[in-house]
Amino acid sequence: MKVSLAALDRGEVQLREQIAPDDPMWQGAGVDLAAPLDVELAARSVGEGVFVRGRLRTTVRLACRRCLTSVDNVLDEEVDFFFEPLTEEDEEAEGEVYPLPARGDELDLAEAVREQLLLRAPEFALCSEECRGLCPQCGTDLNTGECECVPEQAESPWGALKNVKFD
Ligand SMILES: [Zn+2]
Ligand SMILES: [Zn+2]
Image (cartoon, rainbow, N blue to C red; front, side):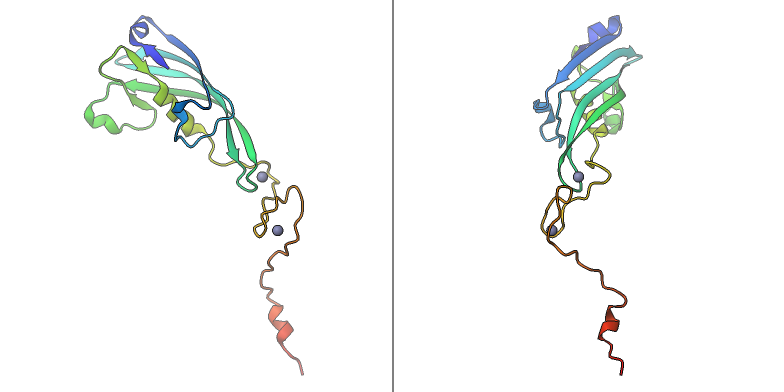
């Protein structure tokens, strides 16, 4: 996902790419893509830096936090970020600013795109608001059927009365 700096000097550079869900870029990212990532970006020089904006589209697969069923979440996000020639002290610049390499004739957007996607990928999902989840005792998916477990009764405030003998 590289942009030629010489081309940037001449004007805006458009970039369209698809990154497969099994691309090494996602290794260890902790995100499970159910579709390729569609990258549509436009980069242009601004002062000493490079401004990039565009759109990221994909489908993120998550497990429902209650019943663990796979849930596909469509992600369609506008992004913008900036590359700046950073000095050593700025190294910790956070958020949407990335270091512009001092040397080289290409700017690689891959790492920034990866980070922008991870920032926007949801962490949790529910298959539906009404999801009944799994039985905590036997693990039956309560959306598909009942189980034989007796729910553990909370101690009733009247329970103790049953043991009181009235003469
Ligand atoms: Zn669920
Ligand atoms: Zn059960």
